[in-house]
Length: 187
Image (cartoon, rainbow, N blue to C red; front, side, top):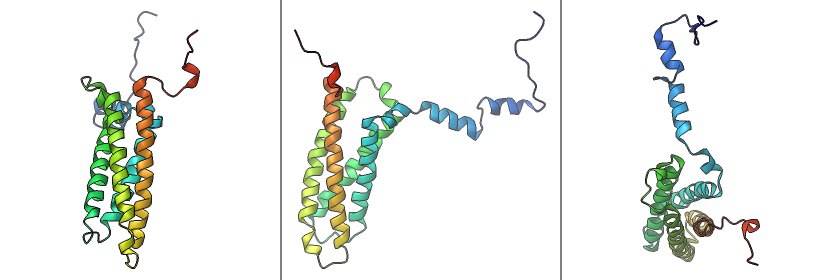
């Protein structure tokens, strides 16, 4: 029994088949490397879901305004600045957490950073939403009235999503996690 090799290769091809099976340069190997590097539990977490909602709704918000003729009203410049800037930053932060880059950047206090970011984003989106909602009326006879009204609606939804993210970030920062069963009452 000792003469039997522990690994037997039964392939009848070149050695190239062995490297593609192990992940070499094949597309399947690349896909498995990318998915193994992704933080899949983050996508299913509340923070991950909220960030995806913020990205999608934020994109809808600024795309509706950008697709309309908003230049006559300078207030929409502020709305576009807030919407696009926060959309870009949220997308970058989502990718940082999705690919576990935050684990390599240990010098950043991520819980405090995310709490501060979501709190500031909520306040900025509140101002952008109010500006957007107050500026819809001058366009009531215009073709783009529906764009601006829908943008105001999506601005409110994004503001709420950032607010909920701020609350969950605060709970994570305090270490509570939002579970009432883990709280202990001192006796």
